[in-house]
Amino acid sequence: MDVIVQQWREQRPDLDPSAKQITGRIVRLASLFQQAYADAFAELDLNEGDYGVLAPLRRAGAPFELSPTELARHRMMTSGGMTAALDRLERKGLVVRTPNPADRRGSLVRLTDEGLRVMEEAMRTHAEVEHRLVEALDGPAADALEAGLRTLLRSLDGPSAPA
Image (cartoon, rainbow, N blue to C red; front, side, top):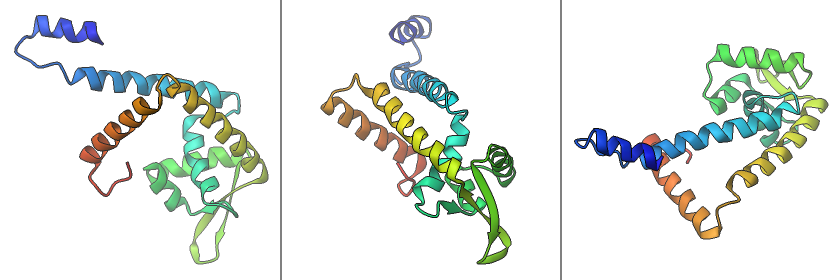
């Protein structure tokens, strides 16, 4: 990134490329993180999208169920995208859809026993990958980065958004 920024300074001295020091690194880190998660989840026959749908069900606690609308909200997905994801996870035997007793028009999505087993392993794997990805940062550096990223997310998402 340092070389790229220096090249931009030489080629376009009228532009300030200093923000690239941050944004370029964030974009590169995002790519590296996504690849690390993809590699880890592949061993469980999951992808990052699958994990993103299953994780809110696990976090909900027993009986590990939410409505498709709640899941879509957690994932910021359209209802059509969520339906396709749930169809795939249902075919894998990880979730089951049942009628919602509180809303005859709706359904609930619940982790199956196999889904819960896979999620327990996936959560362990996810945590291991997260720690490996940031192990180069000592306590103060990790704290400073977390605070800076929180500030940046709040400035972009708004103060009420989760940071």
